[in-house]
Structures are given as structure tokens and as C-alpha cells.
Length: 530
Ligand SMILES: [Zn+2]
Image (cartoon, rainbow, N blue to C red):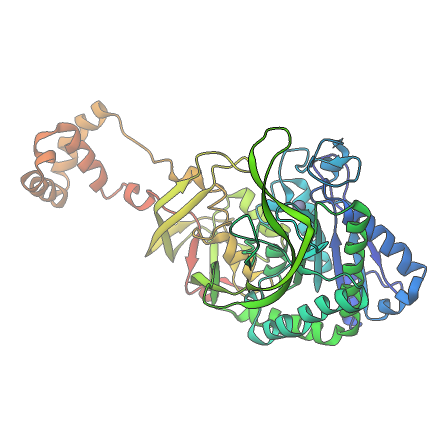
């Protein structure tokens, strides 16, 4: 199912009770589709073993599992990061309690695939996107191992930010699906699970904060397509076999829930997709809402001061002899930090090939202009942006982007792409094309060349034409005389005069093109969308 940067193809297994393997047909039959990917970080391989065991057991009908295939199909990518998995060492993830050898975190091109879901610079991610849009999964699970705090739980869970769903679906997710999964782990599997322990201060855990999943993460990506998304993060200090078992148990609970509740899940997704097609407002960035929280039962170990054995450094550690249980706050509410109103369509000039390719890979319907034309669009101008000092994922990632917009006529050419905001992939389209989104194409430097400057002039050639230029343009001449009176620099500095004149020639598109974000917003697409 598509190539990876390792030169080996991805594999996808689909387990289906009635041997229907076409995803669209499965959905027509009222079955949910669960997609599981493993080994995105191949040093965290418990999902690889857990999925293989689960596939074997459900096919052999161990413990009556097969009945769940009546209403759900299970698709498994056994190893997503194949390149990383081929690069093995006992010394990778050196702080981890097994297995004996682990794969490398980064793929063959040194990309962290769990940052590559939307920008898709690895072949792996582009192949994954093709799989994703083919399957259109209702539920999605990405399996990991977590570092960090130490506690009694083996399995911790990151679930999609519920507020990314429409209210009724959010209510169902928060109050039905998530409680059922936590309860299943506790009562059926006897292996209590806790939300991913993201904490602010090392030491005794007083509160857990929710995971702000931008779409470059797996569950952030799946949320763009209205999928119920999950990441298991099993605790790095627990023995490997225990982590495999915990992941297996969570898969079992997820399959059980998906099968028992397939009508609800499919109904919510259908409605979510309809709302997405019609949506006008899109939240680009979120922030934690500190004023709201739930509580969770937390089973920790007492944190004590101590001394590291080799370095003698004073440090703290979690004392396994002193377990405790506490009720703590869980801050899992987010509020919009930036919302935009989508246009009827975006227009992406043909030149931006990498952007167009990714839109296609993600199932975006587009059409090309048939003739050169002038269109009234809303253009963004980039007023400010800050590239990071040190590259991440091979990028000097742009953040703190400020823009202003101008409605103006712009030239477009035959072959440029109209991207209507009226489709299933709307969230991907808006998220990626809006320049202020935290992980859109602008943030990932896809458009940086547009900010580098414009045509210039040679001083002598320009000077020799000045008289002719001013003699033929009385308006320009008058404005120039006025500028010389009002601006001391223009009056005294011959180079400043040239600069002023160049910027004010009517033929110059300089001003219009300087810091122009190349993607236009068609507020009224008129007859352009067929
Ligand atoms: Zn991971």
C-alpha cells in the first residue's frame, strides 16, 4: 500500500468477518472500520506484537473475539516506520525496560513520522495519507511507549480533543465512549488505565494536563477527518510483556466498543462530515482552558529526594515501595485561540507543486482554471513571522505569524488550482492553507520563497530613463515633487529618490507582490466551482 523512504512498501491487513475488503462497501453494510498503526516510533514496538497477537486471536476466535467482526472491520499497519525498524540497537531508548533491541525513532530520512502527518515529506506519510483516505476509518489507534513520570499504571491514553467534534458527538465521546473504554480496561481487563500523564512540574503529580494535538500528530490528523482518534502510551518502566498485554487489552476494548456501537459511531461520523462540508468557521489553533477540569483517580508513587548512583547528582525519584492513590485534576478542555472564516474557495497557483500534490494525496477535489483570468480575491500579506533558530524536521519552522488582508484584483493563469471549501477534506484544506495555522504549509516553510523579495533595478539604467518617465507621467511627477518637499530623506538622498520612484511607478507590481501570501481566498467563487 505505497512506498516508504526505506524503499520497502507499507503493508495493510484488513480483517473482515464476511470477506468484504472494500472500505466503501464495509461502510455501506453498516460496519465501522478501525485502523491501527504500530511502530511509528519503532523503539516503542508493543503495538506491533499486540496487533499481531490480536489478529491471530480474532481469526482463531480465541475467547469468542470473532463475534466483534460482525459489525466492525480491523485494518492494521503492522509497522509504519519501516526504515526506523530496520535500524536496530540495544542502546536505542536506553531508559526503556525492553525489548532487548529497539528500532530507531526517526525514519530513513531522519524524519519523526509523528510530526509528518500533514506536511507529508516522507514517502511513508504520503502513503499513509492514501491509505487513510481509502479506508476512511471511523476509529484510529496509534500505539506508543511514553517516557516521563513513573506511576502504577501501564497503559495511558491520549484521545482526540473532544471539542474538535460537534457538540452532540463531543458529548458522546466525553461521556459515553471514553468512560466505556476506561471502564472496560478496569472491569473487563483488570488493568486500570489513566489519561496520558502530561504534567507541568516533575515531582508528585498534582494534575494532568490535556494533550494539545496539532494536526501534525496522528490523532490531530485523524481529527481533521472526524475520526475518533487514540494514542496508547504504555509506561516505559514496565516490563515489555506487560506493555504488550496492556496494548492488546486496549485494542480488545476498542474493538468491542466499535462493534457494539457501530450505528452510533457511523451516525456521528456521517453527521460530522455533513457539518464539515457546510462549515464556515474553522479553529486553527487551540489553547488550554485552565478554568475547567475533571478529576481522575491517580495511582502514583511517592516522590523522594535522592542521589544518583554514578554522578552523585542530587535528584528525585519515584519510590516503588510507597504507592499511593489520590484524586487529581485533569485539565482536558481547550478553547479556540484562533478561528478563521473560510472562503468559498482558495486559489493555489500552479507553481506550488508540493502543496498541490499534498492536497491531492489527501483526497481534495480541485479544478484548474481553463483560461488566464483576473479574479477579485482576498489576499493575505505577511506582516510578521519568526522562523525558529534551530531546525526541526529539517525546517526553520515559522511561528507567530501576523497577517493583514486586502481585497484586490489579481492575475491568475490557465492551470492554477481552484480548491473549493465544500468537501469532506475541508478541515485539511483550511488548516493547511491558512498561513496562521500552527502546522500549515506556511509554518512548514512551503511558501518561504515568496517572501524573499522581488525584481530590482540597476541604478544607472534607471537614472537614464528618469527624465522620460517623469515627462510622460504628470501625476507621478507631481507626487514626486510633493514627496521631496515632505520627506527629508527623499529630498536629500538620490538613492532614496530612485527607490521612491520605483515603488510608485504604476507598472510596478512591487508593492502588490511584496510579502504577498501566494494562496488567494475567493470569497465569492461565483461560477468557478463546477
Ligand atoms: Zn512515540
